[in-house]
Image (cartoon, rainbow, N blue to C red):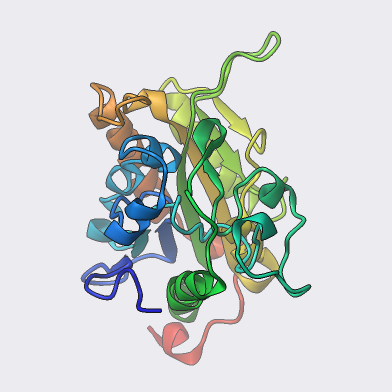
Length: 298
């Protein structure tokens, strides 16, 4: 099956003119290029299908490459393919053919309709009119998912080779959380898999930047970090990973997905965070693997 993105890039690596920092930014859910074939397969209108997007998150973090850090961003939408899942986390009810035991068909994400190929968008709205073929799944996963993760791994390896350490910032947005019990709802949720994927000092600095801007910050609840954070965050190997969730109401209308008057203010806060992280001596703060000869000589 020919790729739905045969005539355009499915994702993009934006590299700085000069690599100045071991930071790597990843925006896997902000894609908004919807293939015509996919739109013809869905029962949803053009706005409803976009409700799973982390809309505009790539633009909130867009200054990173100008400041010396690469960014990987998806152009494909999350409703089409979710690279923050295992590669074959699939719902068997979505496919014409039976799925073999090698697929993960029983995860909580699959049960919620939010596997690698999602069954629903927000508010549990079914995406597809008809069942899919496994050829379609292979086209998306073999042709886009695996190359995407190969590109992300390449960026992290380059950072470790150059600096002895890497820090992945996984960039996301979240629906506005309503007040729970007697606690105010957070504006920002930082996920480090309960302290296992990122050095505490990096999380603390990130929290301080957001709280100093008047934003309420929570850690790991309700979002502790997805597949990318869990997979790449290996501090013992010199790679740290932190997921950042920004409440959408702060910078956009959650119904129309249009940017609101808060967009520039949130982008300014994110830029301050990027500056602060780039200004750190990460090797001194978190330690590193043994530096390669080239990096050690520089």
